[in-house]
Image (tube, rainbow, N blue to C red; front, side):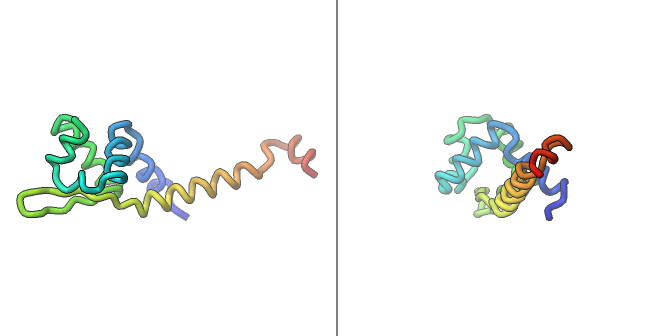
Length: 109
């Protein structure tokens, strides 16, 4: 079972619309992450805003940064997020099948 902190960190990675946009872009077009310049062109974000969101995604473990000479490249690393999504589905399945109160429990019996 994933800790609450790890679960929260993974969902925080996509908790902003711009991070969701960057995530979708890197998922659909991984080559966009080949350089920061390509990401800037594709997202049309300001440099400071893009770097801020990429750093937050990196802190959350959703992207990994790689140096390629003078360039910096970014790639998705969705493993932890996939695990968090799976755990969230498990939690909702358990909650869906649990009676909400004593009256519902009596009806179910």
